[in-house]
Image 1 (cartoon, rainbow, N blue to C red):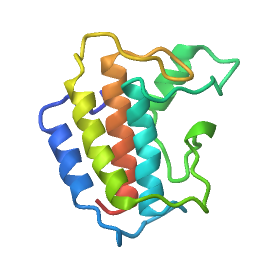
Image 2 (spheres, rainbow, N blue to C red; image 1 turned 180 degrees about the horizontal axis):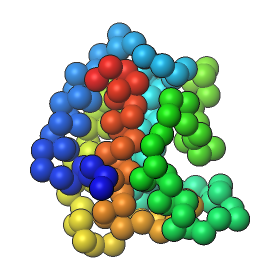
Image 3 (tube, rainbow, N blue to C red; image 1 turned 45 degrees about the horizontal axis):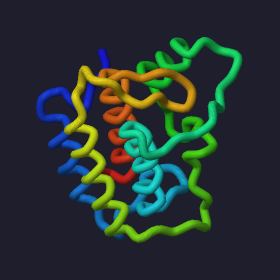
Length: 148
């Protein structure tokens, strides 16, 4: 079973980990800078509240299989990134704004009715259980990338 943001204490733990980040936080692996990582995770959080949409990028496989693989199978370092979520290496962002947006988006995800309607992801339909698991997994993955 996947850990979800909506599991008791998980959203608060994520908030604390995001709050611990500083402009000087160094990556343990990968190429993104701290501000780029925050922009990247914010895109997924924004998609889960209906503020970011993208074209389908995975074709030829059943949606349920793609969703299962992304949510429930392990991700390694350097796991593939959907094209619209890639951050060019030369782009830089305001750290404080991205960090605050991340915290705000976590609150907005948590404020949505878990059993209510949720936006579709680019490659598959999603419900609250799916988004909660994906958001936790994605944030945890990138927070670990920066030692948080």
